[in-house]
Length: 365
Image (cartoon, rainbow, N blue to C red; front, side, top):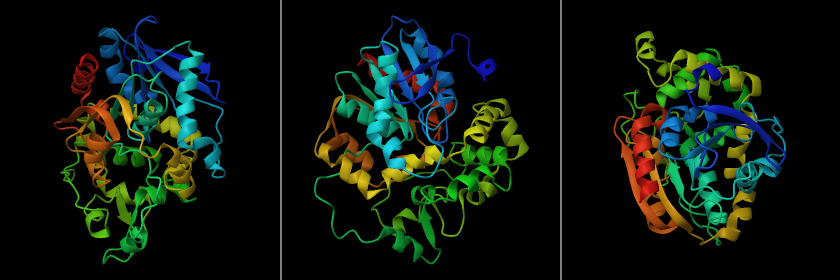
C-alpha cells in the first residue's frame, strides 16, 4: 500500500485507549488544525488518499484511520457474536475520541465521514461538540437520533418487500445475516472481481445510477432503488453485482481505482473478512440500538455541518426524507449540500479535486 500513497502521506499506529491498536494515515504539519477523516464500507483509511495532501497543503493536519473491523487496525473481534458491545455507535465514536486523545490532539477542526463514516462523524459532533468542532457528512445523510416515542403504524417493510411481484430484501438487513460475510469473501467470481463489480456498480461510471428522490419508506418506492440497495430476495451481494462487472476497457479507463489500488482493498478484506464491519449494520438495524440511542432524541447537531455527495449516488435517497430532515431538523447550523457532477458513491475517490474544494469552502465559511 505504501508505494501507492501520495508523497507526503505517512503511516502510524497507536493505542486508541479503547481496545484498539489503530492504524492511520496522516499528512500535514503536526501543529496544524486537525481534520479527522472516517471511511465507510467496504473501505479503508486508504480511501482518502487522493484528498489528504491537498488538504494538508491548505494548512491542515489530516488523519485517516482504519476504523474498527477494518484494515491494519487490530484489537477487534472478527466473529458474528456480540456486536452490541463493540460495534455500537457510541463505541465507534469513542474509538475516534480515543484516537485523538492518544495523539495528544485536544480538538478537531472538523470530523469528516463518508458512507457509514458519516453517521459516526455525526455522532462524534453530536455528543462531543467541544472536541469535534465541525462535521462534514458525505454520501449518507444524517436524519438525527431516533425519536423518544416509537413510531406506530408503519407496517412491516420487510414483509412488504418480500411480497412484491419481484420479491426483494433490503441490503442492510441482508448484511446482518450470518451468511453475508462468507458470501462476499468466498464470492464465486473471486474477491477481486466481487469488489471490482461492487465499486463499479455504485460509482458514477455505472449507467444505471440516475438517482431521484423517493416518495416514501414503502416497498413500492424502495423497489425503485438499484438491486445493490434493494436486492432480490434469494440473492446474495456477490450474485447481485456480478452482472455489473465492468469490461476490460472500462477497468482500464477507471482512473479513480486502478487495479493496483483495488488490490489494497482485496488484500485487506481477504485478511480480515467483512464480519466485524458488517456488525456495524447489526447495531443500526437492532431495536436494542435504537433504544440505547433514544437518550439523544430531539438533540440537534449544534456545530456547523454540511453534506457532500456525488450527484449520481443513489445513497443520498435510500432513506426517503433524510436529506431534508438533515438540513431542516437534525442540524442547527446547516451550511448546505454540495452534489458533485459525475460522481457516484465513492465521491472522494472519483472526484477528489471537487471534494477538496467543497471541504475548503465549508471550512472557510
